[in-house]
Length: 345
Image (cartoon, rainbow, N blue to C red; front, top):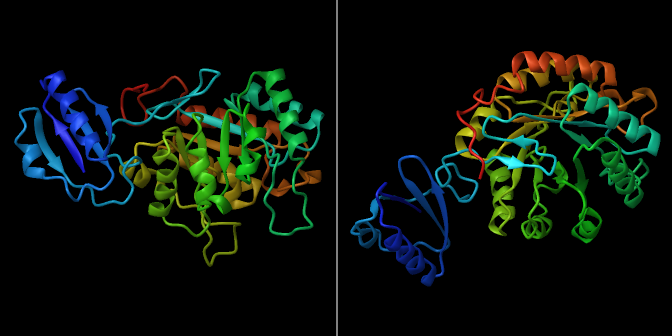
């Protein structure tokens, strides 16, 4: 349920109204706009008398929300969420962010070299896997704690914030200094992990599962947000279909659909969607043109000898070329490209 307050609502009456809702065991989330304020009610609203609320002088109208996700719902929060990283880089509300780096951290020279290359090309965040979920138990699983140590060393050398994937809530102490925690496709519905991430106050990059609907993705985001962490970035990485020409099937139509349904930033991963580096640039450009808030792209200095996902990784020079094309589609200084004037919350 959402309650839309009048533009001239008395602040004292609004506070009394808020306290009354809390006394019924409801949580409230306010979104203050130019013309009115939206109060989102989260909890059991079945016993809330709409007529009593409408009778209040400060209330303009009341609407019931049918969708099961509340915090992630644009009806609760009309303005785009803008997430600001420690480096000052932002995503959402017209701000475009590029994350780039190798699928897996392999050694110090590799991760620092790639970090320097992607930063020079214009990337805002360094991506790199320390923990790697693999279909085969015999495949390279990542360097784990050593991988995180090397990522932090690369951040120290370049100043780039880090995004890396978590596999288990028990690993959370290792992620204390990580800037963005990634939840992979296989863990999108690991609800116990999502609950723990909801207790944090740092950005979470939530990837869509390979066979999950958008509503299921938004419900997973809701798990994180219900815990109090509203810094969620949605990531489309392709879904599994009957097609075998590409690793997964990239559906770019989800970008405008997610922006219609939710206020959260949307990132696209063209590397995992296609599995082939030749297809990464056109899909990256397509996602940019479709209004994505950012991209996450795999870049490796020696793809042929990569320990993980070499065939879908761009070489640094190809990534630099792609960044030039992205800027022609979406100039970094153009903050009005998406949905209007950016609003930082």
